[in-house]
Length: 135
View 1 (cartoon, one colour):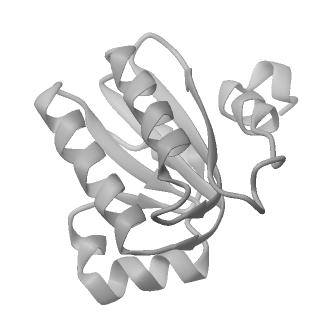
View 2 (view 1 turned 90 degrees about the horizontal axis):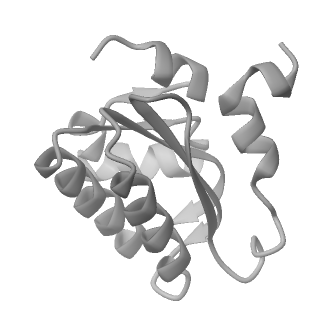
């Protein structure tokens, strides 16, 4: 499906990798009237969290029922990045939204497994799968 007909793909294409070496960059965006996708790019560590935190906050301000965090372009996540995702999950829950993680790299998946966080986040292999999953 061409990106212009697939909002999730269009959002992914809009994500820039310019900040990937220096830290996380992010692009929040609505997919439809009930869902939003936040694409995170780069590393999620103590030095690179502000753009990711801002993007997650902006995405939640759109009042989605479902917020998908696209982790496909996140190569590394430390405990501070995990803490950010857990805080975003709680903020989403308080706002009546469900936060779902999509396309996590093997490195990020390993962190989620080692910490047990894989039991609190709905994990999906792709953004499309996360958007299509029942609420």
